[in-house]
Amino acid sequence: MPETDKPVIYLLHGDDHFGLMSFIDVLIGKMGNSTTAQMNISRLQAELDSDADIMSACLSMPFLSERRLVILTGLVEKLGKTDNGIQTKNQSTIHSLDHKKNILDFFQSIPRTTALILIVEDEWVRDRGAWGWKVMPEKHWLIAWARNNPSMAYYRVFTLPRGKDMINWISSQVLKMGGQISPPAAQALALAIGNDTQRAHQELDKLLTYVNYERPVEISDVEYLTKPGIDENIFEMADAIGRRDGKQALDKLHDLLVHSSAEELFGMVSRQFRLLIIVKEALGTAMTLTEMCGLIKLPAAIVEKYIHQAQGYSLNELKGIYRRLLELDLSNKRSLMPADVALDVFIVSLTTQMP
Figure 1 (cartoon, one colour):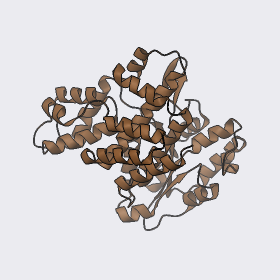
Figure 2 (cartoon, rainbow, N blue to C red):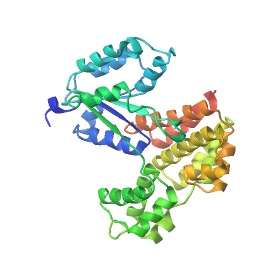
Figure 3 (tube, rainbow, N blue to C red):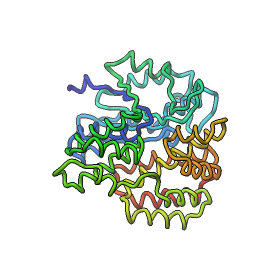
Figure 4 (cartoon, rainbow, N blue to C red):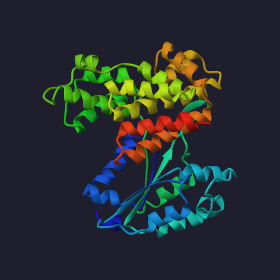
């Protein structure tokens, strides 16, 4: 596809973080040589980086490449705060409700050699009596603009598969990975891990390696290799973080690293805090324990542990931790810092600086 036919703005959001990140990886893979590609990728955060830095990254020309990528998180959320009259750090022209036209004019000024990827972090909210991950309503002005400008903008929602769709997702993912899995094994894996697509990918990688891609993964393989539920060390590590006990949190992390890769732990820890956000929100309603069990698809004994743990955090703390995990996953996906070191830094920063 000629550069003039490719979108300039990619507006991406949803609760399937793995699917969203995989989509971005595909875009990066299309940039060719990995070393040259990394020289043409900017990862920015609207809450931390100035407007000048964001604009400069978008307007710069690619170096030894046909295109450059600017991956920006938090812009839509920051615009939402400004819409509500909340003043935020680094706020200026591009972040004001009164300057929507300026934002769209800026998008129009971005050269076709740049792809600006706007990542929206969905939050757990109650809407019309139902809970769900949502930040951008269907009538959001940016979504309307993207749909009205298909030659320039690309809009996509990444949603986690529900119910039987997760079994179909597993079967499809196995084929993409070059392996096979029997229907009973796919069902057993879905029952063991729920609809966590990131962990499912990690488990499939482990299972396919175990069978050496020579035969289909069977239910006995899933029962042998996949742990159902949540590792106790994950709970204990989260408890230690809440107490700001850095030593114990690091000890639990290193215990987990004995049996799991750092990449796999990113998914496990992210899921832990994601579920804690859901439980914390639910505790502010009249929702019963049984309803919570149905909500997060876990047995009562485990949900009770989540309830106890959630009471040790404020909702803002949990959302801040989850946001840091997403940012760390994004910024370190292709960095030189080993994933286990990145997790160490993450825990130390939380236990020494968490409000």
